[in-house]
Image 1 (cartoon, rainbow, N blue to C red):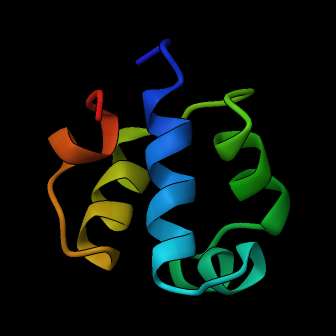
Image 2 (image 1 turned 120 degrees about the vertical axis):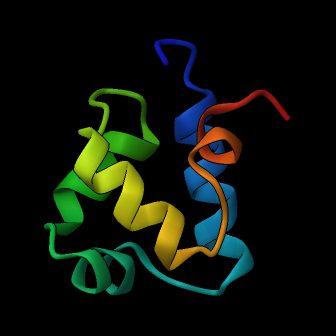
Image 3 (image 1 turned 180 degrees about the horizontal axis):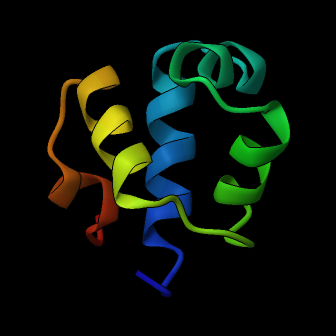
Amino acid sequence: MGNNCFAKNLKELRLERGLGQVELAKSIGVSKGIISLWENGKREPTMYYLILLAKFFETSIDSLVEFN
């Protein structure tokens, strides 16, 4: 990743669904702080969490990490 596309895409998907960071965090079993770090490009999720996020948002991993 490294280009912050994931960060931008995650935040857009979350906002499109009308979810707060806390709601998303609870849904995939992480803390709100982790969601914040991901959305700010300060950390990247492991493959495990990419899979959970893709399933949660009913999208592909490719679409989570690609340029829009």
